[in-house]
Amino acid sequence: DDTPLCVAAWRLNLEIEWAEKPDRLVSESVRDRATRDIPHRKRSIRELLRAGADISRIPHSRRTDKPKVFQLALAEYVTVLEELPFGVMRCVNAALHPMRKMADVLTQALPKATAQQLKAVFPSFDP
Image (cartoon, rainbow, N blue to C red; front, side, top):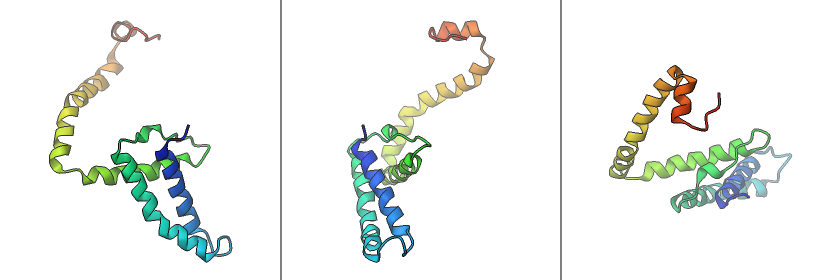
């Protein structure tokens, strides 16, 4: 169930590993090709993100190389966000402001709530 974004980030991870391997493990031509391909892999990830790829669908199990893959995709996601005009980010932040305020209120209120109060608000809550 790997998404195109996951595959692209995984390939970027491989290219980085090949580019960084010692001479005795990888030929110079393989290392050179990997080094040359890294910017293209990063650009592919950014294009997928711009097209709406969901970074949260990249699994990041600690048993595999997925955390590293997720971090590589996340770094490109930050690059894409930094390219957005200030006005767009201001609108996004304004739209998220009510949710952030509610999250702050809930964060402060939940530790003080009784099981009965939590059950009233969240019917599926089972203490």
